Length: 285
Image (cartoon, rainbow, N blue to C red; front, top):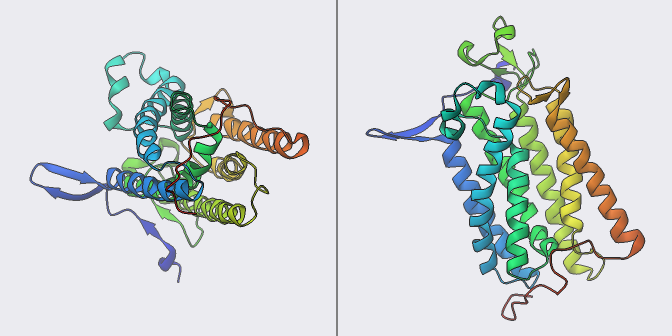
């Protein structure tokens, strides 16, 4: 029974065609992007937003997210790059951070919304369910790479990590917390919550204010990431603080503060535009 819950990566390579190796991580991320764009376009139609905007903003967000994720990681691991600056752009060697990707993607989305005269909150409300789903899928890339795991454990759902991937202080241990699995399950729950609220909002018009889904995503994702980060062995640190936990606390504060602003004051959230978003008259009801 114990063995039934033991995880072990088969390796990072999905398949090879001659000299070309397709890695699981890349395949999963590409799949998450495709599924996410399709889902957000569908949600945009239900919110009477031109779905073509989603495909356009996706390009902005993906590029900015990759750049942001790399810059974020390098800044907090600068001691590893100060003597080899050429590796700063070597993203294929690993080293990205989801919070950096979220910051970079959010900035790109805000600029896009401003240029296209659409509410940033209308836009992000149809993007965050796809973001949660994409994070759920993408975390399995950590499994195949044998990375982003937790402290040693002997629980039934333990994860085997090969010696070459273990931190030096844990070389004598074979099994670790599968934090990739914890976060994947958590993100799936966040996705289900957001989708439920999205369609609840459609049935109860004007009950779910613009920006609510985005703020709930901030809270829900951050709560899960905070406790999961406490188990990990590879956290980005600032002194004795785990940066992901600090950012998670900020995310919860922003989310709760935003909900209080929306539902206690009755005022809309600060936005990049003052006009209403473009309406797609041909969208489905």
